[in-house]
Amino acid sequence: MYNSNKSAGKIKSLIDAFDYLGQELNNYANQQAANPEAFAILDEAILAAQVQNPWFTIDNIYTAVVNWASLLKTDELTNWISGYQQVKWTDDIVGLVLAGNLPLVGLHDLICVLLSGHKALVKLSSKDKVLIPALVRILQFSFTEINERVKFVNDRLGQVDKVIATGSNNSGRYFSYYFKNIPHIIRKNRNSVAVLTGKETEEQLAGLSDDICLYFGLGCRSVSKIWVPEGYDFDILFRALFRYKDMIHHNGYSNNYDYNKAIFLMNQEAILDNGFVILKEDERISSPIACLYYSYFKDRSEVDRLISTNCEDIQCIVSTTGNNNVLPGRAQCPQLNDYADNVDTMEMLLKS
Image (cartoon, rainbow, N blue to C red; front, top):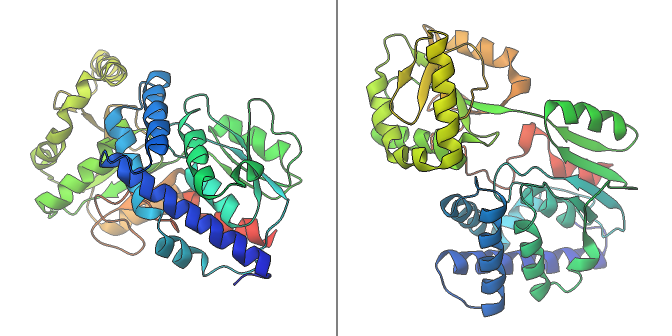
């Protein structure tokens, strides 16, 4: 698996450090201060993150913390990287331009860079400047070299050997040009979709409500568009969504809800409204905050053709049927081998 004893030893030490980090995240989620200093670092960072970015509510941060605690385990990490070859410890630097739409959204890229043996030069999003640096501080308790392997910058990345950059469609075009001469992964805007049969169970619809509403629908894995069979009863979906009714009390979310509802009403567009989520029939994939687009279909093959046509704009497909689909409730819980845009980050880092 590794091409030298040094590489093997360093990667093993990193896996142990990430396992330790996972334990500390789990301890924090359960309010158990096994290491009071690590607990204090997390506590301070999570409080600061909420002030810095009002979309990072305590519930959403805790959700991200719990999800990562379940993944940062020795067995999970070892099984994940065991399928890759040519892992070596190197001084090559990978530039990371991270997104900040969700708490800890850039952590997977950082883990990929480190476990592929590279150094990371990280430009954090202005919307999330405290959470990932806090985790790096905790990693130092178990892996003292971490500050030699991870550096944070406020301005341009400068000289790097490879780059992974996430941003808007506009910034994506700039990144693609600027980093065209080095190995890179450039990510742009994407959304997720769901295809319903009308026979989903209450449990499956509850899971779909997570896929739609968790993180206020701001993630690329958030479902922004659904296809439903003709004659679909939206009341059952509204009942499932009702568990997220308190979203309307969030100032930013409620402002978007009020604004989009006003625009639809002024334009005399038909909508379905439950008081906190607006459903609108629309062929587009990407819906505004507090809105969910839907379309009817007669035959699933029609939907498959539309999804294929729009594949560059779709992150994942939620459905109880079909191949390569994500089951309801799992869209916001990606595993270590669930790569954004279906581009294998580890493969790029290791082969180039």
